[in-house]
Image (cartoon, rainbow, N blue to C red; front, side, top):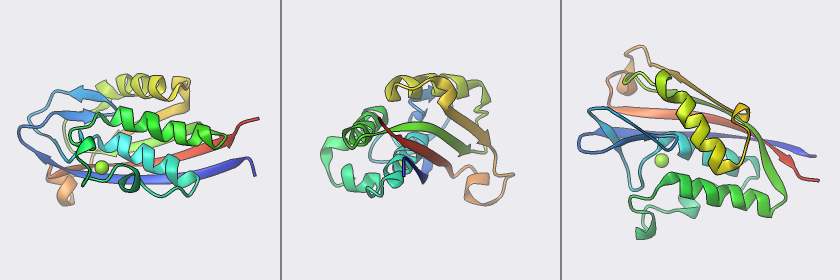
Length: 160
Ligand code: MG
């Protein structure tokens, strides 16, 4: 079998006095995501999907919140490490498809910048990285702007 698939999900709470970082891009907004690292919910969902494709566990196993090394960590650096884990095992990402669920702010103007940033970190063509955004139609905690969630499906392919 030369193909494997994984899915990832993450959610973080929104709070004041935090930057809003999604896919490594800082987005101007009144609220930011709260977490031990930079709380980049999109990058976290991507990492979990990549790890899931090889049944390698989840990001909490590799970067536990109890470890001060990851306090305020740039999630793109963690993503680079997860990508290396795949490469070391002879695999690479074929493509990613993500959805960010956020009531506000409008994310559409920032999706291309996220795609570029993630493609640089993963050394992939930007067309291999799909990022979509939707609102939660004002329903539930995401609809009340208490948090932002992200989902990713990753297809990976065996090298050689
Ligand atoms: Mg997270």
